[in-house]
Length: 398
Length: 172
Ligand SMILES: [Zn+2]
Image 1 (cartoon, helix red, strand yellow):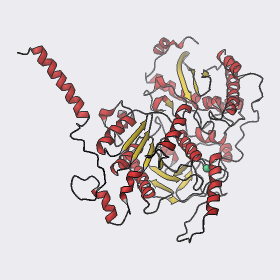
Image 2 (cartoon, chains in turn cyan, green; image 1 turned 60 degrees about the vertical axis):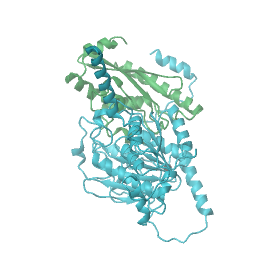
Image 3 (cartoon, each protein chain N blue to C red; image 1 turned 90 degrees about the vertical axis):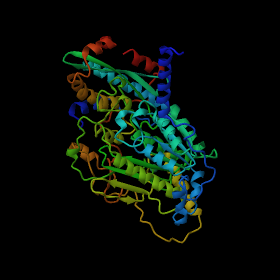
Image 4 (tube, each protein chain N blue to C red; image 1 turned 180 degrees about the vertical axis):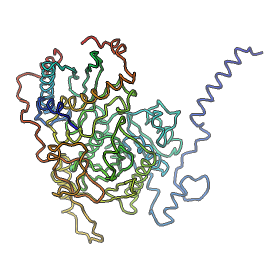
């Protein structure tokens, strides 16, 4: 006969097991891996509606999706939804990079669930996505790509993380800050890696995606950051007490644009858009193509531009079927510059840098004058006699 | 916007010449020397002006920085640990200064306690690459942030002097 104590203990154990089981699905519930994508329309085939794209004449060979590897950098509001869409589409391999943890403050966005709070975003994402589609291969890295030690590793995984050990097919930037975008830009320029940049504004009512083929299209450093003008009174957008707002809607729209363009790029259907903006207040969607800036700050961008020109020159002339309107960056023009509020006269003058020619509804976050504004003339003497160690010691002794 | 006081402070911080980041080998060492010279000058200026408000040091590679900053409010001193990494794209992109102990206590922070910068910071930084360095990021980013946020956090009761003192706020 069992004692009350042992029964209590058993109840406790079972409760713990139940709690654990409700978090993960049992192996029985997890479907078997599928060797070959089938077009058969049965309710057990997760790919039937995707394979129907072939029958409808939209995509020639949908199964090829399984040969591709995509790296998603940043799995927050845009990146997690992007990763889920690619997983459901049956992408071959997905690499995910992020150093953040799931927080309850993220619950206004899609994908993550309250019980995942405290888990690293990449770990939580991998668990969920593996359950959705076990055919996808996952590789996740929980770190900040902008620091020295991680950046080297990041570059290595982009160049060797593909399904066959080669470079990934496409990098998708879903990060939320300038520093990380510049780090991705640097890496992709160096490796000649095609990527798509995406972003949602801090006021949550605009967003964009931009395809970057190093040397062929404008890189992220070719022009100051572009912003989709929402024609809101800057004064009403004062960021009193908050850094950023976010909406699940805007993020999902941008993730949708990003993955749509990704599918078109990988599977070769439709037209791949170079730049697509989203102004949520007016429901306006500016698009344009952008050539690289011959005066770009990034040396590797210039090197890629040279390479691209040589390749183009060596290529046999094709019959131009459709001439795309090209927009050239870096032409002098005084098209409506959107200046920051509360700038002084001097700053206004200093801001008269070159503005790229952009499509209506897109502008630059700021301009960079050439040469840069001088605050003062006193520059540091870089020919100090002191060694770095001595300087470090002096600093410590202050 | 950049107020007059900040502008005056900025004008006293020496500018940098070498455009190099942590991936640039010997050039980075050169840049790092410039950074230290600048910071030494800046701290000395602050001391002379009776406005000493931070200390910084780095690892030997100069890629990771840490130190303390303090803010005087109603004659009481509030001290905080600060830290940041030098991004691989430095000095094109500025370092993101963080006060981890205030993470989650104010909306004017990004994850990890990175301080939220005003709209003018990034354009001004971008226009002054490679002349601006760590000292400028402190003067233009952290200084104004503390001046606005700390009194507010004290007033809201989010931080108290007793707690600061216990954390060693009195010894500098
Ligand atoms: Zn470029």
